[in-house]
Length: 526
Ligand code: TZD
Ligand code: CA
Image (cartoon, rainbow, N blue to C red; front, side, top):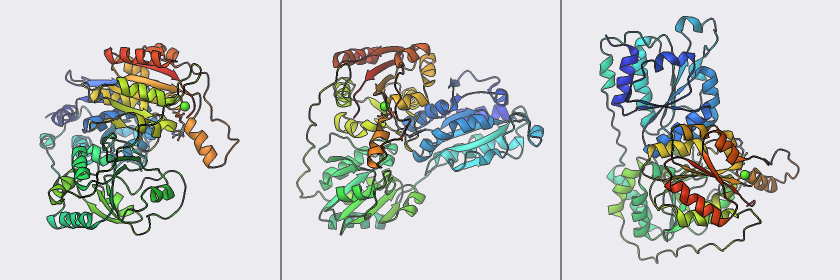
């Protein structure tokens, strides 16, 4: 009879999972024993990096990513990254090694006490199999649970003495399972939505990350062009669902109740597709909707639909819904929205670039289908204004704002999309949470270009401090970090770019390289 170990690897192979992101300990060694040649192990030196790489990989591939962590301590280190994975609907299959079964009760070293409790509430499902033979079935459940909508991370704790046990006679049955999902609204529901759009005088479309995750970007463009309406990106954007140089594109909505209402003033119908309603951040209370406006929310996530404080919702697959809706939409007579104006030129400082000019340089030189992994919190608006994003899957930002995502996620995205250039645009504050990702970049020769915007401060917090009238908070500056030296210490080549010419030269060099390049750019505060 096959062992739990053998059945598990055939299950993973069958599900197309042959990359393991991990950081091992003694509990995990029996799983890693005899690691098959067709599998790849990607080592991260901290579990935040491991989970961040897997998150980027899952988001950019649209496939579940497998993670192997060390017991409770390793899981704990990954928890911050799990906030992002949870809100990104990222299908992470997280496993953690447990002590041998007979050693858990006495709380030996490395016993993960109440293991399934530990990652909650940041996982969809969490489990420790009750017996060794249940391990392959539990992993199959984990993979399917993570992949079925709404997607999200799952967790399985596996005692290390389970791996060489017999898996049982019927274990292979679980390996071959396939699960399909359909979430197409009925024709009546689609017609009702089409009628509401048709009856509106001044409708507006608000698009969220699920549109990009479901690769419905092209359908959203077709809908916008047919209806000739303005398109906003939903607040706290973690992906780019709509080409930001399209004439219908208006920008990213602010993440505040009052701000959203002000921006949508005058619209009688607000159709939100593939985003929560809404993902607020700044506390700026106000009315949820402009006077006279109605809202319709299209989402694949029933919980997201249920928790919204206003509007009607249609729960169904976002791609299938838009596809079914389009034939019911007659071309509008309205004038096409005017494209946004080109933003104004900005002055650099002495040996320090304005972030706007970093982005203009990047936009001029980057390949058209470049993928940006963005984690510099004070420059989000500038970035959306100045850097063109055209293709699906062009932008990833930490979905819960949990920093330490950017560097590792850039590597995971690059591993998932080797044919596209990945460019990390990372703040000096953010970079330090996951700096050991540089070692993985070097070790696996992952050819991402990693730009560090060094303004020596937690810039976004300076903005928040002004907004919240806190003028004396300590701990907001991060001066004197030499990112080029850190990069070289971990084996990554680095360039200091303190002028636009130096930045342009470094970018061109980085795009041509077959291994990572870090570019440290001293920047002005924004
Ligand atoms: N810790 C974690 C894990 N996540 C966070 N979001 C924060 C702390 C708080 N925080 C923000 O929300 S923004 C920010 C911090 C520390 C500053 C990030 O600085 P940066 O980017 O250098 O990456 P900017 O452009 O200077 O803001
Ligand atoms: Ca900074």
